[in-house]
Image (cartoon, rainbow, N blue to C red):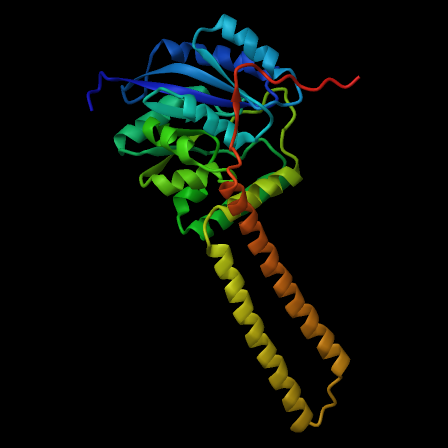
Length: 326
C-alpha cells in the first residue's frame, strides 16, 4: 500500500461514567484529528470520535452535549437505556465510517497515541484485528487482575486459540470487519468472540497502561462474573461437550464404586453401609444432572433471546437522562 495514503480511523468510546473523564480524553485526542505520522511513517487521522452514551448514573449526557458543540469531530450515539459495554461498542462500530475502527475506554487508562503503533502492526503484517497487549499490570486490585488472567486463560482453552485469549477493550479493527460484525451480531454475543468468528489475521501491539482518571469502576465482581459467563456461553459448544465428559466420568466412577462395594462384600468380608454409599451416589449424580440442566438452560436462554428478536441495542435521537432521586 502507498506509504502516503492517509488511513482514516473512527474512534469508538462507550460512555457509562464519563462526566469527568471525557473532556480530558477528548482534549488528548484532538491533535490526532489533524493528521499524524506513525513511528513507521504511515499517515493516519482520527476522522471522528463516536461517543456512545450507555445511560450511566452520572451526567455523561451533558458532557457529551458540551463536547459536540466544542469539537466538530465528536459524534454522539444515544442509546435508549443501559445495554453494557459490548453492545455500546457495537453501536458505535455500526455508525463508524473510517477505514479502521479503534475502540478505547473512557477512563484514560489507555493512551490514544498508541493507535499509531497499532496501525503500524496491522499494516506491516496485513492484519484485520490488532489488540493492545499491556506490558504492565492493569491498575486494579490484585484479586481482580488474577481473576481477569484466569478468565482469559479459560477462554483460550475453550477457543483453542492463544491469540484470542489475549484480548482487551483497546482494539484496532478493519472498518469493513467492524461494520459487518455490528450488522449481524445478535443479542448476548460477546464482542471479541464475534470478532474471532470473522477474522483470521489477529495480532497484538505492546502498550503501557496508565492510571485511571477520577471515575468509579462500572463493574462490580458480580457484573464481571456475569460478563465472564456470557463469554463462556458464546464461545461455542465446548462447554456442552464438557458436560458429556462429566456424564461419562460419573458413570465410570459409579462402576468403580459398585465394584469396590461388591469386592468388599463378597471377597473382603467387609460390611458395606448402605445409607452412606446411597447418599454419596445420589448427591453426586444429582449434582451432575442439575449442573448439566443449568448449562443447557443458559444456552436455551441465549438462543431464545436471539430467536425472539431481542435487540442488541436501540439508538435514539436524543439522550436518555439519568433518573434523579430526591
